[in-house]
Picture 1 (cartoon, rainbow, N blue to C red):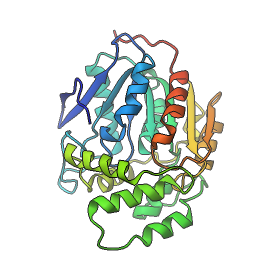
Picture 2: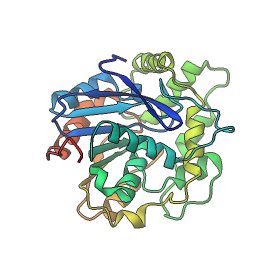
Picture 3: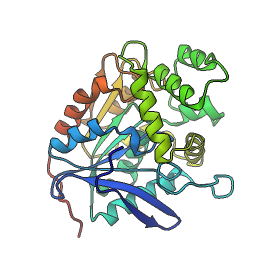
Length: 300
C-alpha cells in the first residue's frame, strides 16, 4: 500500500489510521471496506481512479484491522455502533459535515445504516456487494437469529466449495482460495495479484481474527434488517451487485433498491463478491457519476 498522507486519530478508546487524498474542496468520498478488511483492500489503482476523477477520497482501517487499534474482543467487546461512532468521529475530525459513503459488503450495510440513523451526515449512499439484512450472513456463519427479511442465504455451491478447501493450507493460500471462490467462476481471477494483496495486508497489520470480531460486533446490534427503515432514506442511493455474488445474491440489492424511493440498481454481469481489477473502471465510473453533485467540504 502506498502511504500518501496517512495519519492517526485518537478517538475515545481507539486509534484509527486514515488517509485523506485529493483536493480538500472536492466532493468527499468515504470508503467503507468489508468485514475484517483494512483499507489495503481498496487497492491503490482503484483509489487513484476516484482521485483523478475529482474526488476527495478518504479510506481508513477499521478497529482490529491494519494500523488501527486491535482488541481482545472477549475482554473488550464492541458493536457495529462503536464502529459507526469511529466513522462519525473521523468525519468530525476532518471537518466534514457530510460525505458520500461508499461501502462494500459489511461496509455497505454500515453505510445503509448510517443513511438511516444519521441522514445529515450522508450526502449519498453507494452500497456494493452488500445486503439490507445482515442477519442472513450471521445466521449462516455464527448461528445468529434467523433473518426476517426472507432474503436468500449464500449459495449452496459456494458453501460446499468452502467446506472442501483442503486442510493444511497456509494462511496465505487459504485467503487466496477464499477470494477465488468469492470472486465467482466467470470473472477473471489473478491468484498472484490476490496473493500480493494479502501479503500487503498482512504486512500492514491485518489479523485473521478481525473477521470474527466484526461478525460478533454485528451480532450485538438489534437492527440487522434495514428494509423497513430504508423507506425513509432521502439521500441518493446506488446499489451495485455482481450477478455471480455467492454471498449476497442479486436479490439482496434488488430488495434494497426497491425499498428506497428513487434508488438506482446496477447488477454487474460476471462480478462476484470481490473487488476485482477487471471491474475497477466500471465501478469507479459508476461511483464518480453517482457522487458528482458538490458537497460543502466543511461543517459549521
